[in-house]
Length: 410
Image (cartoon, rainbow, N blue to C red; front, side, top):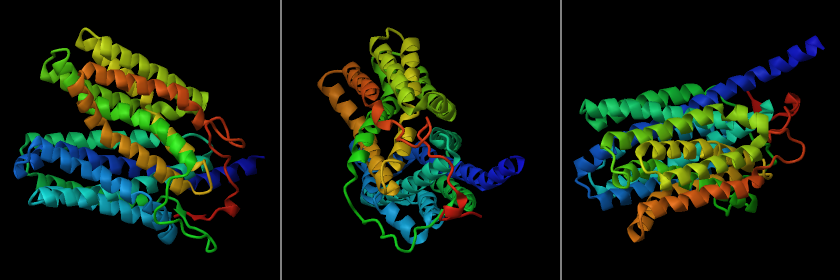
């Protein structure tokens, strides 16, 4: 028995190492987003863009991601999971230098289109590997991986904030960040699972509609990402315009929301392991709905900030669990994950504009009533994340026999 346990531990050791590597990849991916987001005002000022022109340009990353995501599975099939992730992540990190170099609006839109395409494809590739590692370990890890993305985004935002306060040229700042993150990403990718398709397997289609299972799971992710995008982009505006708070307090609300999301994701795996994905998401939906009600009824900033905190706490683990459920939903995990990713990216694209349009027609308070209604949808839709037969409570499959695996490890 002792020898058997030692053998199992030895077999799992490289998988655990691969988990750490993928967590680092998630952090690198998030750091690109965080660095770029802080320098958007610099790009706007340099190109003398109006708010409308900037809004148009910032739609292109989501467009590029939505169009390119279905290609990720085919690339992984052709080159293997490790090489595909290494190449796609390097394109994403290195391209960080291009948007600030754009000489005009058209060039900026083109740069951001490719920026979003490489972001989306690397996103699908790293989530597919995360789901595979979760299945091999037999326990939930996806929430923690997405928590590392949030940590990376916060770290990148902090670096960008320092650079902005120092009035550093964004071309220099993002050039240095691109170089550092490209190296870190390449090192991390060396240790991820090297999954390879069997020779007899047919490559996935270049473009195809997501499977029905992905559409249903994606609808749950849509609700969570809409609430996330709305809260990130409009929480500070809500406190400033509706509750008449100072700019500093309003900005602190957005920071508090982001920190709540990151913290909840980092501990989310333990919660999912204890209660399972369905109960976790339903409880999160109740918390997020309560937070939304608190926001729209708040008479002061403290209650509103608490409400936004509850929204962040409630929705934090939904998207990681949606990716995990998609990876288990059929014979083509990459295709299902790409479908869910496309739906969630689309939600993130339309949320800020939809919030503004509703606010123009009615009020910002009504806009957050819509957000509250969508969070209630998490309670109703959580059942689609239920673990299939033959898996544990978290939805993860038992650790497979390594002799049947097609993965090679470093």
